[in-house]
Image (cartoon, rainbow, N blue to C red; front, side):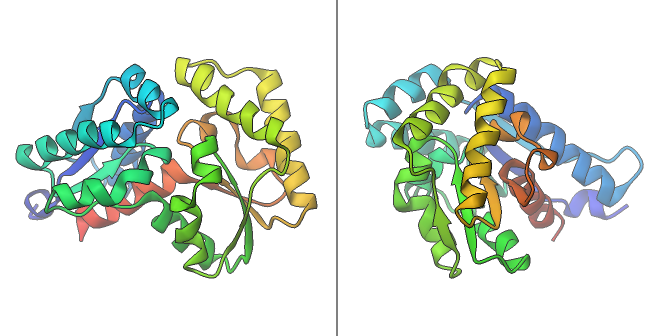
Length: 236
């Protein structure tokens, strides 16, 4: 029974949004139970931020303000006993370096873990879907490019704005519309025609909407990948 005492505690900065945080909590416990059996579950400490505040600061480009909130959350998780840290959103990894600098425990980086998964499948070109910040800024794409993976995003600005709006104003409120899913699939199909060998669902809400059966190429569920990396850390 020694593994109970050796299991590390996973810290999560959640509420980004609470819907995807629910998935993180479920996945971490399901994965831990798959590894250990019986009634085993993960040791988790959750700090849930107020998403309306984060959204307002993001849209205003106030990343320093976001970093202050997130670093404070990270420090509280570390003080509470977390052994590692998950930032429960792809976009918020723009300030992952600042968060890592504020604590001594490791931040498990969602883009780095996703890049590892893409490399394992030996894909050279992938499409990245997410908020416009995740798609257009370099903080996420650079982690893939470091692994010699080419990254494409929708070439139509209207598609980028549509996805960004759907994430913040629909999915963030728990709204997952059939017509939104239909347009996401059209965007995915267009990216595949342009040469995408895989599709990164680079927003932790998108996997609630889009599944592997919606794509003819490999889909990378970043929430699942991130959670699996944390469980591996916690057991090693």
